[in-house]
Every structure is written in C-alpha cells, then in structure tokens.
Amino acid sequence: MEAGRDNRVLLHFGAVDDECIVWVNGKQVGEHRGGYLPFTFDITDSLIDGENELMVSVWDPTDTGMQQRGKQVLNPKGIWYTPVSGIWQTVWLEVVPEVSIESLRLTPDLDSESLSVEVKVRGAENGFSVVAEISSSGEKISSVSGQVTGRLRGAVPHPRAWTPDDPYLYDLKVQLIRDGQVVDEVGSYFAMRKFGLVKDAKGHQRFALNDQPLFLYGPLDQGYFPDGLYTPPSEEAMLFDIEYTKRIGCNMIRKHIKVEPLRWYYACDRLGMIVWQDMPNGGLIDGEVVATLSLILGFHRNDTRRLKRFGRDDADNRARYRSELQGMIDHLHNAACIAVWVPFNESWGQFQSADVAKWVKTYDPTRLVDHASGWFDQGAGDFQSKHIYFKKLKRPTPDKRAFVISEFGGYSLKVAGHLWDEKKKFGYRFYETSEALTDAYLSLLEKELKPLISQGLAAAVYTQTTDVEIEINGYLTYDRKVEKMDAEKIKRAHAELFGGLT
Image (cartoon, rainbow, N blue to C red; front, side):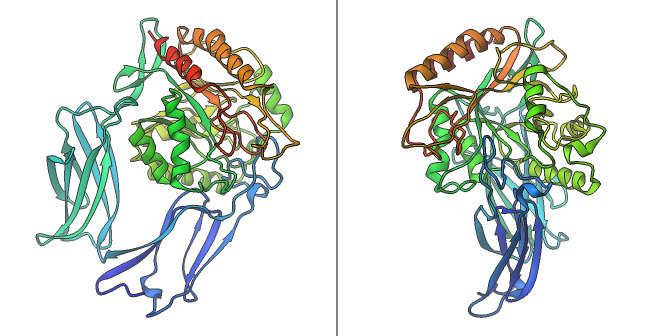
C-alpha cells in the first residue's frame, strides 16, 4: 500500500477491549487502553510497497481488573454476562491529505437559531481556514467561515426542531481551505433540539424537550447478541432493536453500561429515539447482601470516603475513569439523541459522584445528568433516580430534582427453543404464558406507574428490551425471534402514559 505524495494513511479502530498494542511491519505504531472508545494511528511511515503485515496484541483482565468493563465477567450468571475480548467494532483504513479535518464538535442552540461548529485539524494549522455550509432538504440555508482555531457559528433561521415524532436532521459540509483551494472536506449532520427541565403547575420538575414537558418511557437496553455478544451480527440486527422499541410506542432507550458503534446513535437520531447514555462500570461490584438491602430497605453509603469498598482507592484508577468518561462524552457529543449522561449505576465503582456530576454538567451543559442511577444517591445531578424491583412502585420524599424510575419491572417468561440455557433462568417475577405476562405488565403500568406521573414522575425505564443469556425478562427473546407480549396492547398502554402528563 502507498500513501501517495503528501497523503497520510490512518488506521482506525472503533473499539478494542481492553489494552492493545499495534505493529505494522514489525514497527510499533501505537497503543491504547480502554475497551469502549475509538482510536486512530497514523501508520504512513511504517508502510512498504506491496504486502504489509499488521499485528494487534490485546490484553483484557475482564473482572479480575478494576477497569471499565460493564457486565462482562469470567463466570457469567444472573445479570452478569459472557465477556468480550479484543476487536469488537469496525477497523478501517483511511487516506487523508497531509493536513486534514480530524473531527467536528457540533452544538445546536435552539434559542439563538444557530449551530456552533468547532473543527479540529490534523497537521499544521497556519495558513488554513474552514468553511461550514448548512443545508436543509438539499437546499443551502447558511454558510460561515473562519480560522481553524476558532469556533464558527452558523445561522439556522426558523429551525425545525427535532422530536421523536419529527426527527428532522440538517446536513452540514465543512471544508478546509488554503490559498483559495479546498484541501479536505467532510460531511455531517445535526439536529436542532434542546434538553432540560421545566416545572409544571404543581411545581414538579419535568423533563423538557425544546422547552416542552415530555414524559419519557422506554426500555433498558444491554446491547448484547447471542451470536456476537457486544458485536451486532449485522446493521439490520442492530436497527431491529431500535425499530421494535419505536414500534411499541416508546420514545426513549437507556443504553445500559455500554457504548455502541456510532451508527447505533445515528439510527436513534434518524428514527427519533431519545437516549439515556450510561458510562460503562468499573471498580468493584456490591455483593448480593448489599444489593438486596439497597433495593428493599434503601441501604445507603457515602461515596466520598472508604473508596476501597468501591474498588476506587487507587488514584490512577480514578483518573482513568475520569479520562474515559470525558472520552465518551467527547466521542458522543454530536449524537442528537443523547439527553442524559449516567456516570454511575447501582454503586458499581462509584466514587465522588456529586463532584463527577458537577464536572459533567459544566463540561456538557446541553444535557442532563443522572449521577448515581439506582442507589447510593448523593443528592446531586438532575434526578432522584430509583430502581424499584420486588416491591410496589412509589414516589420517594420529593426534593428539588426531577423524580425518575430508572429501572423497574423485569417481568419474565421462558420461551422454549429460544433460550440461552434451558436449565437456568434469572428474572424478578415469572409468568407461564404470554397472555399472563402481557396482563401483568399492563396492570403494572395502569395501577402503579401511571398514577405516579401526576405525582411528578418524569421518566421510567422498563427492564428490558431483550433477554440476555439466562436473564429472561425482555420484551423479546435473546434471538429476537419471539415477541413475548401482545405488541398492540402494550403500545396502547404506552400511549396512555404520555397522555398522563398534564
């Protein structure tokens, strides 16, 4: 392979779990830590004419280490799943000019009817400028130019706001210019939308999209597949889960402790699906006794001291978490669908979550923060965020934040011939038939969830989209071949939830 004169060859990795070193023709070109974020190496100077040798070495301690790993364990059981090691997202080569556009940071501002465009350039910056052109339905609506090191602000007059019912996307073209000539050009897209909180007539904090209150409802989504684990078997398979969630009338997905390929977020942008994005967990996981006490009795811990309990007593480990959290926010910043960042889930590896939440809000003020989803609430972030299993849904003592049930349900059904393990099962409440499961689910929504909306419930997350290994509490079986509930009935019930917000 030849880069060609004045060109560079880049090797991109979507994600590799966990630590990797890359060689080209026996020469080390780079190394990377972290199993959920993309990275790129310039391999130009290591290439030779003809065939080239690429070697990737990966080491992954899974749950024997304290790094971010999500639900991966070496001994899968219950809600813990088969681990993934090595390359699990796309790898590709790209030939670019010596000086090229590396990335864009796009921030819409609905109030000022504009788009902020920050362009990061790879290579020298002196003597270069950038031009950003905004289009709508193929027609140019504005253009703005400026220095490479500056921030451009393009006009979006009379913006068509993005919503789940009208997920309208604008097109963007950015050119890198030198001496009047286009050196590099990239295409992208964005949506004009705004996330926040507003108070209703009763003083309850409500989630707001484009300054309008909107009740959010949808499933917890683990992003696992029986034939690829973290890796979808195809783009169609990846899209199927989002499309099914949309079809049963949900407007939100909580992406649970996993970072998906960017095309997943593009699909949510395009289809109109709001996303709560979790940071993958690391550190130590609480045992069954603590989990039970937390769920049933509201057991609480302070996460600013005795950090060894959380597996976060090592300063380097905490610094790595913060670095990867920032990396995730940077990586997904342009995803229009993401409304909420979730730094910690159910105390796994939780530390100083109030400080983390404050930092996230400062770093990305365009989104909301669920600082400690489930338990060990430190009173921070935008939400009173509760996980409620095994007992009746109810509202906690209100505070200044919005109230959300960020996990509930977990109603389960075994479907013969569509199980990961015919002899094992995990769930929170079991039913024998699809009809019984559907009736129980409808009753749960009607008798317990819906009344809470008038009491201030702003959002709810049902467990979950699909079965995952022996956890059999999905709307769908793990192979996505069987819908466990009557889709039309639950769609009508979901529509009534949205009508309950007044």
